[in-house]
Length: 469
Image 1 (cartoon, rainbow, N blue to C red):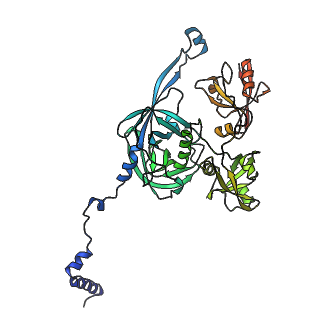
Image 2: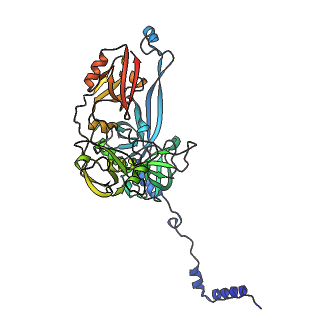
Image 3: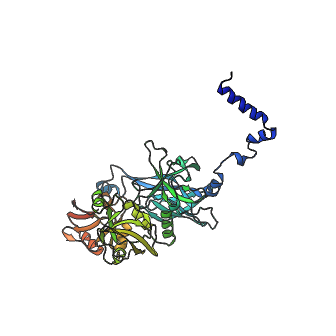
């Protein structure tokens, strides 16, 4: 007697034997007949985007001081005794974004003082000299222009990074470790990463496409070959790729490129006219929010866009043009990438009521002449450039105060830099005298002193120190 399993097997065999030969042939899949049926390839995307990804070579002279670099030795052996210079080379990647040779890379790739030489090498081995159009430390982006060529360059268009979704396929193209142009693939692992600690604007695309040293400034492209980000950093304990890479979104890249093409010395950012702060769990609970999301308006500048829109201190901004903002970094990105024309809509929570307000987009005004001055001589600010504060200057330096005298930059190896004076420092007082203008600062340091008593405001705090003259 047959068991049930044997019966089922006999039934299946009977059915198969009963099928016509043609029907059985149709039940078996045919082997692929063409390469296209076998291979899923990124080659078309690479062919479209890779020619626009370049190598950026930077060469600069770096001065080294020896133990003999001392005024006493200089007095006997001449100025410069005890100092030497050496060439320092660095390599990064970049992306051509216009047919006339405008290149975007990371600021840290081309960071350096005057005298830095920059060369651009294309994927086809052609090399060109380049100049800096704009460098922006706050976004860690730099815009270069290829020199002396009227040819049309391969370039990539900029996508709208806000259209990206987690899980989208992306390619990273660059020159890791200087081995030559390399393409790696991956997906968008996360969006709106705001706690990475790379630049002032903490809002990054996270990808698992392999990014290694030398990839900085390279392209992150979508499956249409469009630029969605500039590869900037990795999270790694070994120095190599561990599947956590970060790219600056193309919407921020667009803002910086547009500012460079307009010929300005800095990025044209919209002015809010208010200072914002992180929303704490305690504040969120007090206003009835079930989660800590949004930003708190800490102060509002009289006559600024926020004030004209009716925003008040204590308001909580929840969204920018319908895009939720989780923290202050997300707000800064969303607001800044709106540009400097038209209006932007903010969702604001006040006393439990959510409302929409429209804020005009405009650049910060220069209400006080900058009166830029280079401070020279043997004084604590020797080698510093200072300016009178205004909303425009405060916006450029990312500080909240809008009056007084601020340090704009310091020269390499200057007295000011050696003393630790930084751009953004506000000179409050010198030897008991309040400093309100650059002219007053230049006048008082020009008199000289045996002892300098300084009051400097940095990050909302006043630093007081005494320095021998």
